Length: 329
Image (cartoon, rainbow, N blue to C red; front, side):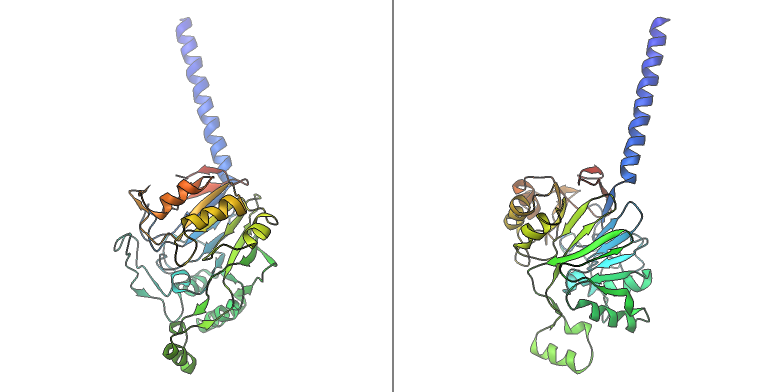
């Protein structure tokens, strides 16, 4: 009889402990920033993947660099979108073309044959979701004109200059310098100017590209590198001033920092608690596992902090110190 009582007590204790653990985990998620990659192939990190959704604990949802792997404004993965961020005007970030649905083509070469011109995937989404487009440099005027052209509200395209910030939905958004090119392709334009630019083989400059620093309501500070090389601001501004704890770092090489350069940025300049790899320009995973010999594998080996892989559709949740509380690999 004594054995039965002790056994029942132990069972109740462990049951209660499991219940407390479940409640604690749920509470942690409630106060976490959720990050959901929107890539071309479910559960993978593929060559064209750029887009991420950030969701503040208060419900504000931010889409970063919609690019080509969001299936238009009706993509069921989007949900409500309050803010759209665009690091620069290249087609793989603003979205000159896009997928029709996920898992078409290969991870190395997804089918992005649906044209979004002359608007863009970004503008189509902002119009449908009534979202605010937040950009730096001279990009706001371009997006304001595109919103107006689509019968939207041009005032929903707003500017944040380097060193300034805007609070939208309880999230502070600022822009920081990036080192890259930033021309609008003639395919987004019309009339004689588009013809002249196309004939010359150049785009229309809209100022320097940008990175972003986001400060969420739970205290988490996130740096979005955009396409960039190594910059002094990554140390002086992103680390010393904003003290970013989570970094989304482009690692694709040739067009942006490669694995070695990106590792130097996070190890020596920013020193965050955690990193999410981005813009790998390769099929980085197979079956949700990082493939040996890839840039992603190299970056993981070189970085001195956890490097999380953005598997499409799989939500990661981060507390105010950039500790991953769920969904990370």
